[in-house]
Length: 124
Length: 295
Image 1: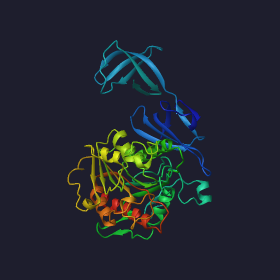
Image 2: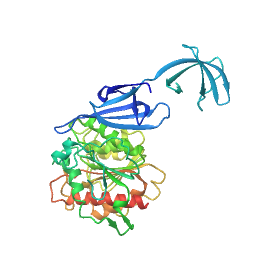
Image 3: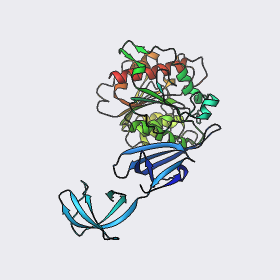
Image 4: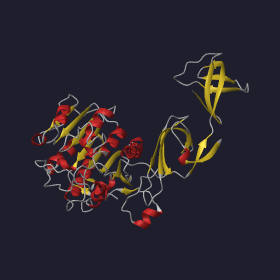
């Protein structure tokens, strides 16, 4: 999986993080003061990028954590077939098959923007 | 740990070595997590107490005074230890109230996301704002001697004397507050209480009060400020106000509201008595759990 390691302290709202092996986008980040006996801790609330599930974690700010590498890509819809569509990557001209999201209305020749991490994709 | 609950406090070397009495932060998601119906979180905030301080000792004292209670509840035929209560320790407090509330809200929201009912042990009443932010109720039901409707007390909008105002006005989901046992407030607070989104039930009317179907199909947060009780029964609190409620009146309100409640707290317990306030608080936590589980 495309990911890189960072420290919890470097996370911020709007950035990505791996929680329970799922790529998530952070929507809340808060830190606690350490006091005399503990280490400063951070709490992260996030939503799965590809599954929409809410997840949270609590870790010391100096703990190592994985951040997924998610690419934002441009594509053009080549054809629509039922619930699937053929999309051409406008950078590599590679054609891929994607499931059409329930709330999306796409048509051939339309340009779309999507997030990609390995074989997971999501229209923005 | 709250007696009868499962210990889910974070295991830290410092906590073990220093015997911190549960003063650990709530831990993060773990692989063995799941199945909790109720999550106890201590919130020992003691930053804006206006008369006698000591609420920083509330969570620890409430837990310790729950020790003598029987596991078995005859009224509902249930055992506390079988109701899925976990204790995640305290979210240690510091003096930046706004930052603390943000962090506490996040910890409580985790319980809500896990479909658990948070049970917050205060701490000053300000911690209810975190509970309400996490639960996002439609209705805030509160047992309290005070209106707590100051817009700001001594210039502080996050004072414990302003917590009901913050919840009613700043938590978007909240439509109304029902305040039971209130017997004091400033003139400006009483003016604010006259608005349609606040209902005040004075102490003499609490015994006859019933939610009826007012809470049905609505999200409810129940807060118990222990000073709602007459100071004779709960002297261990910071701003005692005479002519208060009998313990059985508090109990009956908790029993009536608990089945509809999605979050609960008991706050303003301090260490300035021989345990009366903490014992009452601990018993009300158990009454809430038994009634919610039975409802």
